[in-house]
Image (tube, rainbow, N blue to C red; front, side, top):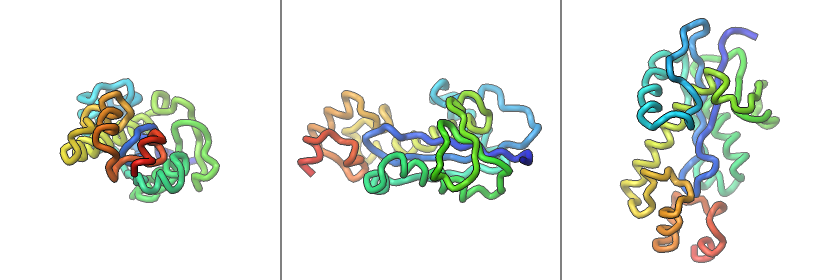
Amino acid sequence: MGPLIAGVDEVGRGPLAGPVVACAVIMPPGARAIAGVDDSKRLSAAQRERLEGKIRERALAVALGAASVREIDALNIYQATVLAMRRALGRLGVAPDHVVVDGKPIRILGVEHTAVVGGDGRCYSVACASIVAKVTRDRLMRALARRYPAYHWERNAGYGTQAHLESLWAHGATVHHRRSFLPVSQTELL
């Protein structure tokens, strides 16, 4: 195994709305780690934004992949997440010597990899991927929130908060809602 490790992570498996986004990052081997890089869930939005810029500046390669709401509903969230990860890996401009993913082994990923449970808090390149994926998806959900303000996606990123659920009951689902994730009575109205 050579020195180029691609860390891969995803964000957005659980929300009621929006895509699942994956990121693959190759950081320069032997270079000093960026101070503050950690699992994106342990960082504030401001910290993630600051670190995302530094990661993009210093990385040998950063690539994103996503699976749409339509793909999530057609495939299921697991298959769609793997699709997003494959897309991210396929877009890397540099071929990694090895791939490390957050979580359990993914037999259908299509590339040899090492799976590390809690990898976004234990592996530097996976933590970098976690941050870039989270910042990217949050930006997307904020942009969608400007078009669909009733759902408060700028605050909940599509997750099933009380305010989001109340808006679903009041306004119905949008094209950005995952039909397979909605309460049954909501999907009956579609």
